[in-house]
Length: 119
Image 1 (cartoon, rainbow, N blue to C red):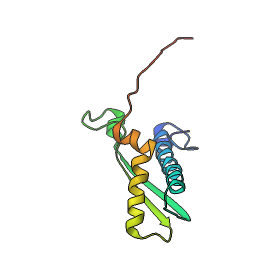
Image 2 (image 1 turned 120 degrees about the vertical axis):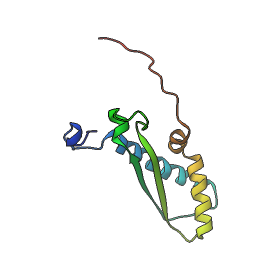
Image 3 (image 1 turned 180 degrees about the horizontal axis):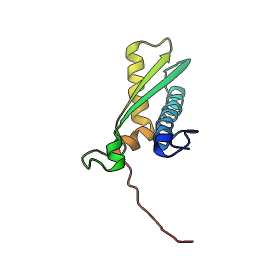
């Protein structure tokens, strides 16, 4: 993990928010594979495309009205399949609803500092 040079890093790896998008994409892939095996939906390939809006004014504290983190994440699922458009859309809805990462992002997770220790 790294940050871009403009953020003080060396730009040799993903930054945390890019990793978050990758984690979401991987979770969608795994969820789709599990659901397809359990249901009557078949596909040869599924591609996940993700993009998000991130306003640095939230991270830097320059604007207290801007959320720190993504303001929105959009995803597109492209299928290679014999299924119809309607079947793909219904399956995509089931995948998004069952995806743990999507649900954590959609509904939030309580995060608390459990321990601080000086060593």
